[in-house]
Image 1 (tube, rainbow, N blue to C red):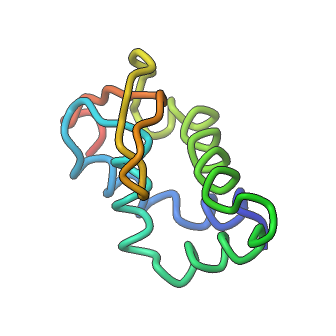
Image 2 (tube, rainbow, N blue to C red):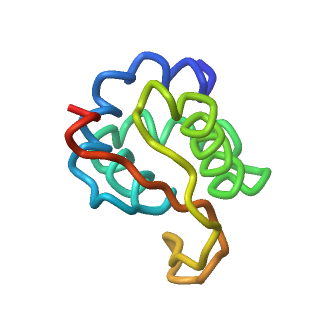
Length: 104
């Protein structure tokens, strides 16, 4: 199953994850919460790309999904800025803003 299909199946849960994040959050913040809530699905996504830079590809596709569905999730792009990834390295990635009240 594709990352896009998995994410589409989790739309209502994604809205809840976003509503629990701070008003300003990074794609890494979202991915961390998503991976914790849907560990098996996340591991499956990574396994699909195990020989191709799995984390970079999967995280990029998750961030793209957020971007394509930003209206549905009540989020807006903020600036691209530094954030710590799962390996403790800093990347420049997309940051988001959401109105907690509109997202509920």
